[in-house]
Image (cartoon, each protein chain N blue to C red):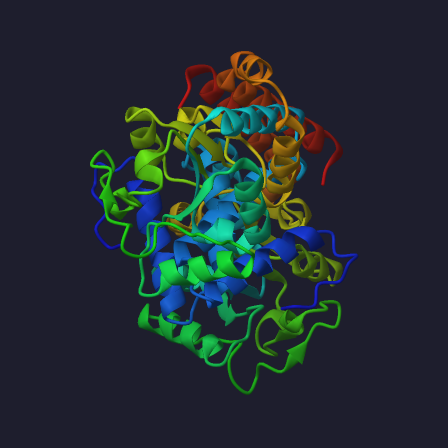
Amino acid sequence: MSEIPNNHPRAESLRIRHRIIEGMDRNVVAKAGLIAHGRGEAFDYLLGEETTAPAKKAIKAAAAALLLSNYPVISVNGNSAALTPKEIVKLSEVSGAKLEVNIFYRSPGRLEAIKEVLEEAGAKEVLGVGETADGEIPEISSVRRVVDRRGILIADTVIVPIEDGDRTQALRKIGKTVIAVDLNPLSRTSQLANITIVDNHVRCMPLLVEEVKKLKNASKEELKKILDDYDNQKILGEVLELIRDRLTEISKKGV
Amino acid sequence: MSEIPNNHPRAESLRIRHRIIEGMDRNVVAKAGLIAHGRGEAFDYLLGEETTAPAKKAIKAAAAALLLSNYPVISVNGNSAALTPKEIVKLSEVSGAKLEVNIFYRSPGRLEAIKEVLEEAGAKEVLGVGETADGEIPEISSVRRVVDRRGILIADTVIVPIEDGDRTQALRKIGKTVIAVDLNPLSRTSQLANITIVDNHVRCMPLLVEEVKKLKNASKEELKKILDDYDNQKILGEVLELIRDRLTEISKKGV
């Protein structure tokens, strides 16, 4: 499975897929995470497998929101840890956001396996595992309500990877600013987040790191202006238009 | 994971998902099959999770093609065996098509596990496993080139589930009529097959069984007319239009 010829028409997509499968073999990715990855692949295909102009605007707004917030936290699940461990740690370093593992399928050792992946990638502190991980967000009905007292519980901004809609809704309800990374522009998470980056994790995380670095010395006013000018519903509409145009194009010229 | 409330907005999709995960626990579904299932979920969502009008036309054409062929074979992979074992066996019975297991990831015992699932569902003969499974289709570069001498090797029509494009192309090249069931209307398989049913296996297999029963007593001329009137590129175009319209609709009213 490791030999993917470079000239394969789907080489990059296959390489990413194998990272997810390896993640599962390490107990980092859940079975449902493999299926979620497939859904992402389909939407990415429709997006043309590139970071679109609206996604770039969302990345800029996300960077501004991270820099403006007092206590940002990056929520890490199995898929994001398997795909972009280094970039997640880097984002945490440049933005000052805490890292917290938060997952739905809590099989034995899985929280620890994800923590280990982040530590291997250079993380010095990983929340969500251990004794301070006994906070609760009652608005969330699943086990994901359990959060770290030093992390998501007291965060003002949470960046969530491939996410379930219920959790995004609950985080919004209790006043958190939610930045989502989700390839499906129609998902409840995408629709409910404050800022939705409709892009592949693998492509957008390095861009987000760069954007935070670039804006790091901007004034509060400049950052606020970026956020004020940002309209998430408009951005999602632009993404849907791109997908529609692409479908039209492909259906005309064939595959 | 087995408790899915009936009022969950995604209940049916979650139930199907769990069948695939159980299939993996039985060594029937490969890890890559879980990802493929996710891709299907995304496209099914875009289709509105219903059997569309163009899919119904393709089902009718597929039934006619099966009844007209001299030696039809149903190629069975892990996902299709996990999702619709009974319907596959039923289709084999009503159409006279042979059943043959053909998979990409040949982990130990997997061919046998799929055979067992089909036998539990009532299959009396399952090809692709055992001593006659030593035929070769040199046009296929992967291990899927190994086929049954009593099955795909001598078939005139092959019905393929969720499939890779290379194999579909090779089967066409050596003159087989290929009927594909694929939720992605843009996949190479969809584009290359003679008849593409863009639908969820779970929904389309019972419909295909019924259609074969209904057309069983039709004359050869009637069946030929159905096939002559069928235009796969036109049908795929109709599916793409439906997806575009649905994207427009959803983007207008929100999720």
